[in-house]
Length: 297
Ligand code: BG6
Image (cartoon, rainbow, N blue to C red; front, side):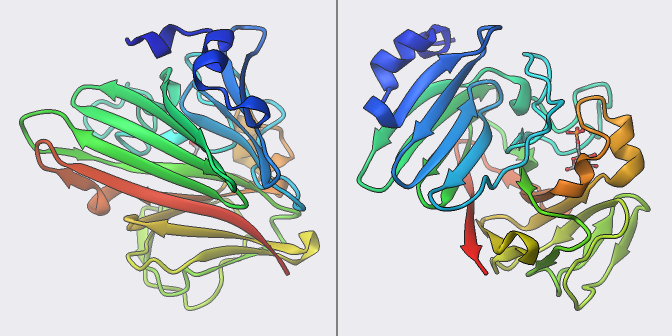
């Protein structure tokens, strides 16, 4: 653990705060979060999990969904925002007792660097756990640009899966559609069946939990006419995209999620999963990026 990991909010502000544009605070339980407030956007992130819980570009509504029942606790992932799934996705295949979606989303990350420019605030958080060193760079601007960089610090090649598990705020799950994945084959996680590209935009009328193999970098959009916007997700070095909505029964089963909240959220996850996992030679690095923004429609 380095010094930055032990810093309280005042110490973080002295070393990494950026005047009015970035400040650190602690909640009642001492969990530290950063608040971004710039002419381009507002945002919030937690050192716990390097977890972003708010991004609101100037002139737009909040892009991210966070459950009103989310639990803020050191051993729990926050329900909503942008959890980081790493170094595995879903259940660990060889050790099912380990936490789902890996350890990154429930670890304390350290602040490595912050900087401001005319149009953005950048924050770099870091987490080292053998055999990996992981750096998450968040660029808060009119768009939210995310860079998840992984270095293999060991002497052998290492495999990992990763996902930026973004929960987006929408007007109504039954009136939106998702474009950009029309040609992508997918694994339906609910039935364990594989499907070829459906050839049409995704619409929702039931629980949906799919891993798309999307090896091209075409933008994906949540088209939301009732909200007067589309949310655009651009990716690089990401060969998988997860589309998830828990619908009614699963919402009731999740203790940290409101029974009716399935209506106003949808996850589009920038990922490398399963056959698309990354095999990283010793000493090498890999960087997956995602960019989230809103366009008026
Ligand atoms: C999605 C998975 O990425 O995350 C779903 O595809 C899972 O299967 C969902 O239910 C939420 O996972 P968790 O561990 O945050 O409850």
